[in-house]
Length: 377
Image: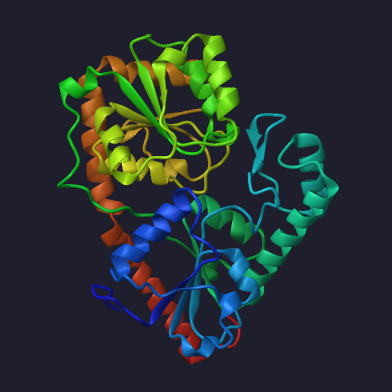
């Protein structure tokens, strides 16, 4: 299967792309690379009465499973935890630890009410359970190949009852910026700027990032590219810690502005406390020739190799994160070596071209399985 030119046979199924986040960034890059057309074949299955007209569907939202009628070959990429976690977080805020329980009514209600994994409102708990149970049932019963963006996600889907041969891991990919990225020069390193990219919410690790920043050399400056409901509290915390002058809040940035922020930093910090399904930010850093300092949770370690492409730290340990920041801030050669190795690692495994080559094989498998009309998978 060759997607070098616009291919009308492939249709991507989404509910909306009008959100900020890694999943949307990936989907938009995939559409651009695969199709390259102004009129891209994006559909919402809830608005399509006859699905047999399509040759191949690629779903990106479990909600679309409610409308999928198995009239044509299909795959679904899972970008979050929703099919096996009603709160979507896999994180106990009360204990500041990741959840490792299989989804169950009793365990998840306890998690919401006692462990702080999500809303404590009964109606929200009920709706979350109902949605997750419906999604996992669809994945178990419908003729569709499931794509997990990390082995971490794949393992949880299998634990929740999906057959192993129905779930394939395909790590994310990003566009190669070889002609645009600026290498990490001594001059850039001396600017002593760190970069955080993402939503400003507690699960992204903003609070412990700020507490860690207060422990390092005052010359280190933090650029925050993103926004979220926790920003006012984060700004107050920065003032309390006396580091407000060392932080620039950029809000959500356009692509050109974000690339400039990548190029002026010496490292990208990815301090999530919840188990991220994948590590797209690490790939963005590598493609800009920058190392990462990241939390060793969820799918992130599948994208970041400690001591090779960056440094991994335990979440919610400010002194450990501060030590990693200091190590890269004080040693340009170490930082530069990690950046170079990260770019090589990215080139060998995570370019969008490599990703789509593997994705095409999954598409072929989905078409083959549907064409043969195998009974049970």
